Length: 216
Image (cartoon, rainbow, N blue to C red; front, side):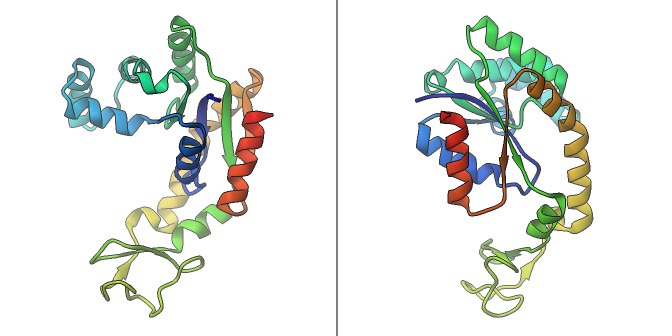
């Protein structure tokens, strides 16, 4: 069974974890915009060379170029049975461009999964993260604390909080996500494609909820 899916969700909602489980369950690839841009640049494809010019300047890669790179990726054999788009579209203009591109290949989006989690819960999830300076192992003060405070169980090195995991950074990221994604939520809701899924609960329970939504 294959699906063409867009996966939406704020930072810290568990999108990456759920995407990995969906890949395994349905044998369809996860297509992350960031990953395919980096691959296109590394492989020096025509689109990748153009994208690198913008990336080197710190500028956003234009929508038409991102669509071109995604179209190249969706033409690969592993995506014929379905795919999970992660990180794209980010705007209504991108959603329109994606729909036109898919239609030209006689494809369409089946489901837009929106993993929903309360902002305060997301902040608590993220600010509890710690990373080992030595081996890079991750911990969480609430879910997976170290045996000794501030010290890695594995190598004894110091644990620290990444800048991305600080409260002010996380709140800024959530505001950006909401401003970008709110119009998309409305866009796909109007099309009857939006499938909200509660992101609270165990990883297994959330994955089962996703499967029920997809297979309903």
